[in-house]
Length: 82
Image (tube, rainbow, N blue to C red):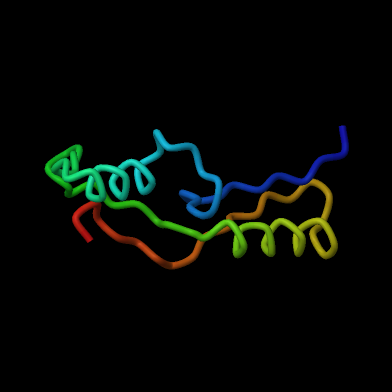
């Protein structure tokens, strides 16, 4: 099977499901509910906007090599409190 693989970090952006971390926290804050932070808010994630992720996927599709794996990230590591 000819394939090219991409792995990405955590996406955020428009139309993200309400149960995902960032939309849930925004909804809680706007509703006057204290945000719930798992792992005491110390969990670290790399966050990438959906536009940037899409750009990375397009680059892989147009310039990537079959059989390679590409990591798409934003160099945007933040803990959940940040």
